[in-house]
Length: 360
Figure 1 (cartoon, rainbow, N blue to C red):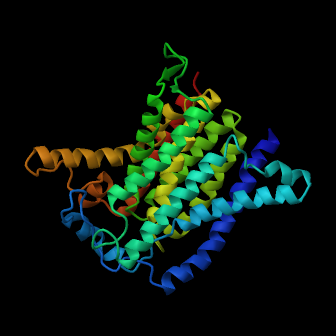
Figure 2 (figure 1 turned 90 degrees about the horizontal axis):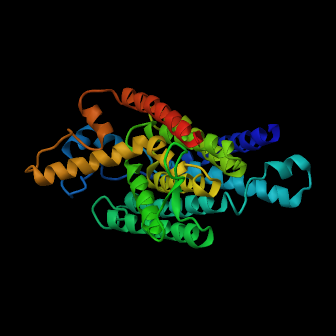
Figure 3 (figure 1 turned 90 degrees about the vertical axis):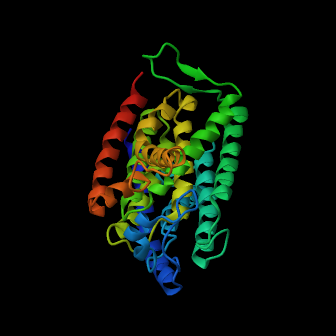
């Protein structure tokens, strides 16, 4: 028990320390080469101008670097690989025990984190350079959704054919232990990953996304630990360590933004971790995702509701601006109030998600 706790917290601490060190170098590079958007402002999903958002954030987007998410995935990836290499080179007992890289628990989430973050980095670079499919640069939404869907397809095929996962788990108070999906599991898997990824637009206020992602991965660390998936729990806490290092410099006023290289990798990995803590461990990680990822789900849902309303109600909107966290800003809430209240809500729903996962 004690060694399992140590295995979780030592790598997390290393990841945090690495993240702080990386940020010092990264900050110098990002500011020296002016790695921020050259033209502020955004367009809504329908391609039209977003005047409310631009009035709130247009000036902030120019002069503050993007790509801050590098701190998160680079510190997590470096920690994971370094501890694995140390375990291969040294026979010291405690080094062997804190190595958490394993084929059955951490290979898949580590791969999706790295691949998603790399594609996000390319998108950030194109947006900064002002090239791509539109004035602001970057990959188009269709291209990003295609990439995310492709990564999800690879994951779904691995779960279905290699790991024999054909459904999602349910607690004992349901009449059946699982919802059997058969081949439809592949489509369900892809849909969940894409939907969670779409919630990445929550990265719009200083400190908001960082705090929420730290809470969500902490929740899954608890679930994985309870289910004796110690390596997966360690992976989640290593991500939390990297996120906290990023958050140290992202709290208002933000030194840099997480941007796509952070949100793409983290959202895809979060969905993968939910499936890893589901039928593979006789758990209910996917059902728990409904609660743990509640802030992301609400964010995506507010966008969908807004688009439907504008389409079928002659341009009338439900929210002053979507996603909904910007709606609260438009109502006059200070950004720090929106952020901290989201953190509180995230903790509450993460606790509910943990209870759901650990029940039955």
